Length: 352
Image 1 (cartoon, one colour):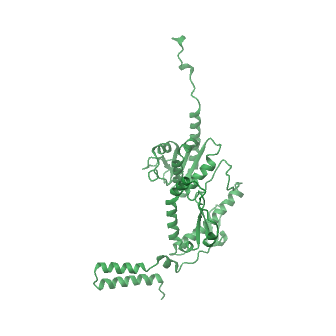
Image 2 (tube, one colour):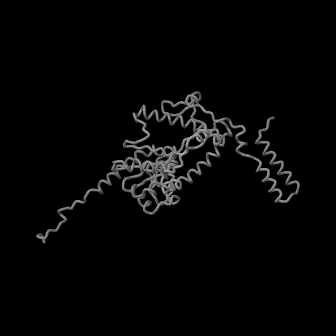
């Protein structure tokens, strides 16, 4: 019978603990011995012992998946949907397999948008009535050796004040992401480096950058936002940094299952009041579409998206969202028209 390294280590821990208890040592000695034993165990190294390399196919066919006539991803041989736990007890490997397949699907969707929808992918500038932000692409991964060879850009040509604001915004976001990446991917961490995109190193930074360089400069008189999930948080951060500009240009905002929090993000009273009048959050709920949903936060109305699945909230609520936009646009146009004075309400001097 074969025993894995993890079994041996934890068996050793159990035996040592039993021996400590039987020996009648005091509590302090037991604690010291156990800490010393645990300090010798490198959990990352232990988890990598039996972990296969992160070497995945670069095509759907290589993964043995394809989209059927209904647009559903199915296994070519079994016809089953995607299975995350492809290998038991290898969560990080399964996660990397999932991400590799996700990259392929992303490229596939781009191809469909261009071939079937006649859209044209342009990085910059955005010259269309619809701007699709990409807040999740904040960095590229490069080999450490190649990174050392390149001349690094430390942003010394950037104004100090601007650099300080950017660093403050993205510090916590990067800290959380770096911790998560280290946990799930210790192998790749030693081989690759993340090169953050200047002024787009986080979803919040990306939203502000797109606003400053494209939306704020657009000739459009009515600007509408649809922000899903973390996109809602990024929009609130945009409001905090560009409150006056956003209020003057944005007509309405549709949030779909947004994870924003006006308290944690320290949104001011004027922002919360504006959101109550100009925003609506379609949240995941089993209630019918547009059914009012209670909220603990004093920011904007919450209504049901007509589905309890987070990823479907945008698609399910689109009819209501466009109606919401149309009504907001009409209300804005009406408020900008000069008030008409009715002749019948005037009292002329000669009528007295």
